[in-house]
Length: 91
Image (tube, rainbow, N blue to C red; front, side):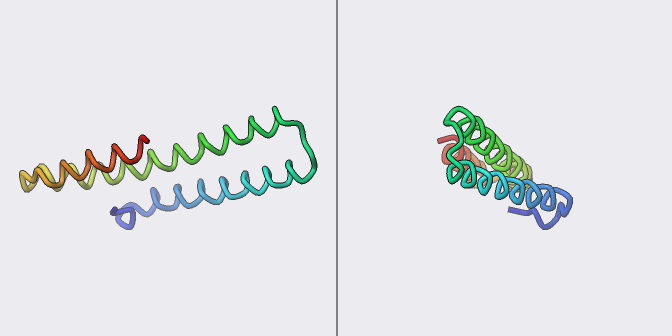
């Protein structure tokens, strides 16, 4: 993956991951403080959505690089790799 080339994209992903880390620590505190289950589940859903967004951003960057390589070299292997990665990501 070429996140190094797009430093603003890499920075955005790192900021999102730090925010997710804070959300997970918040979930731990909620459990320790015996908060009600519906409130905890709402936060679990928020964490899951945030992680999915990070995955989408990383996949988008990988797709741009992989597709560019596939088109430039008429490379079926790069396209197969992209399809494989997508299959693993959406499971």
